[in-house]
Length: 288
Image 1 (cartoon, rainbow, N blue to C red):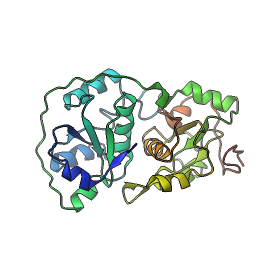
Image 2: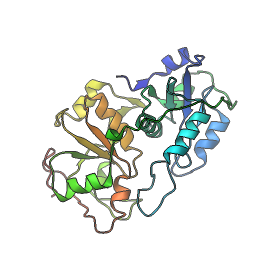
Image 3: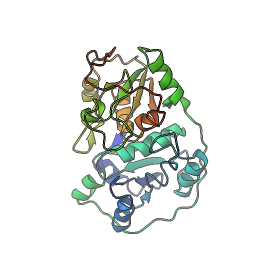
Image 4: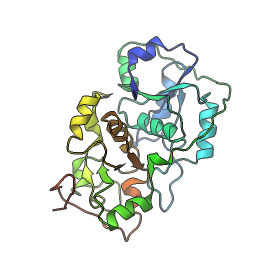
């Protein structure tokens, strides 16, 4: 299965009315920047989906910093974008890959398989000199049938059971950068560290210059794991874990789940343990 498309492919199919394009640009440091950039310039035909307004629900006591959106509301939003179950959907962001991957995961979770991430994002498209526009499309509302794929998501209770029973499977993968994983720094969440027993695979290492590495390279990243292993992947709030989810699928892993609330949800329960330090054994980690 392919998970990404190139800018060349999209340019060739730009006028295909069976393809819908979604702009997911966002900036955690400037919450309105993505919307501004979209209004200034975007790929023709693209509609805008905001990480916090459409791809997440409002923050509450638990659920993390970017809880999954209300399914009924998200269904309505994609229907207003003219997306039905037959359309091929291409999501892009600024080239980071994380925000488009969040949309990819959500649409897959709702049962839509023909969704892809645009390698290199808008940056690659624009630098190639391809056409852009300020025109905001107005699509006829479509009908989308939701078929939730529960096998894609790990609940808080499932993760808690793994930790409390010190299970060797599923394997927890922390997608954040190493310094946050070991607890050296924590710029956002309540307490530094990681979920006990998790190994660390920094999500950005699965991409190169805005493009997902190929399946061969992804397999190298996860070489110490068996493709039959059960995996639960998480990050800080469920966003940057999405590109790692895609990378694992590209590497041939079949049983992969996303803990959507991620570390920010885990530490919202004050009684939950947090680990710090480096991994000694990658398959059956002990915290030093």
